[in-house]
Image (cartoon, rainbow, N blue to C red; front, side, top):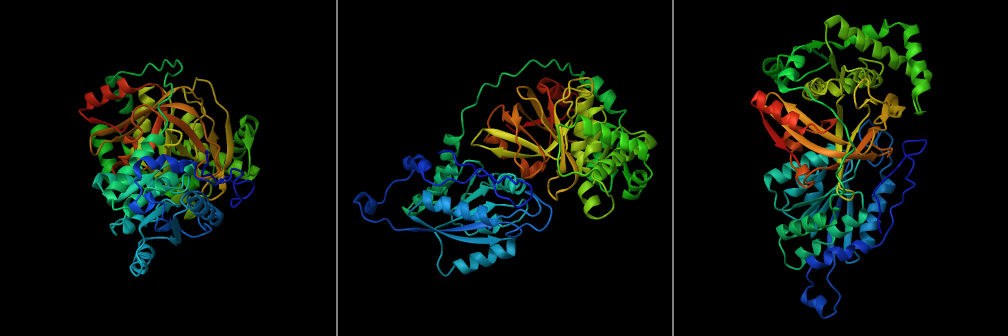
Amino acid sequence: MNTELSVVSGGCACCLTRRRFLTGCAACAAAASVIRPSPRESYGEEPSRLRIRLIFALHGPVQEGPDWPNKGFDFRPVMARIEQTLKNGCPNMDFLPAMANGPEAAAKIVEEDKANPPDGYIVYQMNCWNRVVQTIAETGKPVLYVDFQFGGSGGFLVYTASFLRQNKPNVAFVASSNMDDHVAAARCFQIVKNGGSAADFVAAVTKIRREKTPAPGDLTSLPDPVNPLSPEDTLKVVKEAKILAVGGGWPGISNAIQKDLGVPVISIPFEELNKAWETADKDQAREIADRWQKTAALIEGVSRETLEQSAAMYLAEKALLQAHGANAITINCLGGFYGGHIHAYPCLGYYELNNSGLIGACECDLRSTITMVVMTAMTQGRPGFISDPVIDTAKRQIIYAHCVASNRVFGPKGPANPFQILTHSEDRQGASVRSLMPEGYMTTTVELAPERKQILFHQAKSVGNSLDDRACRTKLCGEPVGDIEKLFTQWDAWGWHRVTVYGDLKEAVFALADKLGWSVIQEA
């Protein structure tokens, strides 16, 4: 049985998935080799039941604000199905469900549990940044930490990496779209009931996770002659760049970018961008909107007025670049839009800039912006795709997700792939891009940290695009080259964003690091 944990909205944000949670316990047998029966069970007596506290870490049962998976998302049927699936798959366990939105709520649950302590805890990260599992981990009880993918994945990856770095002895984790894997991991609580330690529980879950992760597939990629520049020529091009940071910026990273790479970073207030948007040529904006309507494979939930506002934002971004002699712009888009400082998302503008060899980067993330600047220079025009990744061990995939991407992944003169125009996923407003990027090619994913003189690096073969309605619109699926288990280890130190570029650029990245005197951290 292959039961996927997935909710896909239809016309509204809170509709339920067409892919149902199935019930059953076919995966239960997978844990049998690591769970030894107690003497009572050996003689056929009724085993004692385990009490497992099942905690959902989330803002609320129905999501009121913008965040992954999306505003208006109804978690109630999802939580009910998770609980029922665990009950069906683990008939000797009693699951005690609860919700917590942060440390205080988690502490209250722990305090209430002292009167009748459970045998262990399962924590599902349903939204990204609710800090619940940390409090639960401090109980010392065995904890199974689970990602609700495209919902809690950012916090799950960052918090899991932190636990791994701390070598937390009682926290095991599951990052799988297959509910059978969740059931198999939950059955490992029997080990503790039979006298094993929390560390034994973690080892058993780790073993099951690795066994259930498919073996690497054929990682041979399609021909792609990228011809990167030499490190010397790459740095010459980089030194001609200039970055505009609108509505934010990271001073430490900004200073390092200017000092170590010679790239000026200019801070721009929202007011300047907004004024350029207000004064953008309306006829030109209508022409751009016309082109988008003709070339997009699908436009859904986005009005003509919103398209024209997005086109005006693209013209505003271009105007700022021209006025300041810059080739890269990064905007605190979420803070600007939610705070009323800007009135159109910059996503479609980024799409246009990145298609033309310029740089449009999300969320005023200067580290990812300079990464895009460097990689576009190295590849003579190929765009970087900044993303919030998700890891799915059931498919041995990393999914690079964000609400904007280029559709000319081989550079401005390369072929275009299909793209769709949809609302920005988290709040179902504005306009953003789903780029259906080509599969079968080697990709290189990096993050530059000038302030640490380090480059984070991994590669993956593109294998498809996820159309799941949750979370960001563009979701490029890749099969990692190397050890997918190692991919869980760096998120606490580097944050969630990564930048992906089409092409096998390993030699070029390592050569650039040597030229700069930086180190490369291979995260897979």
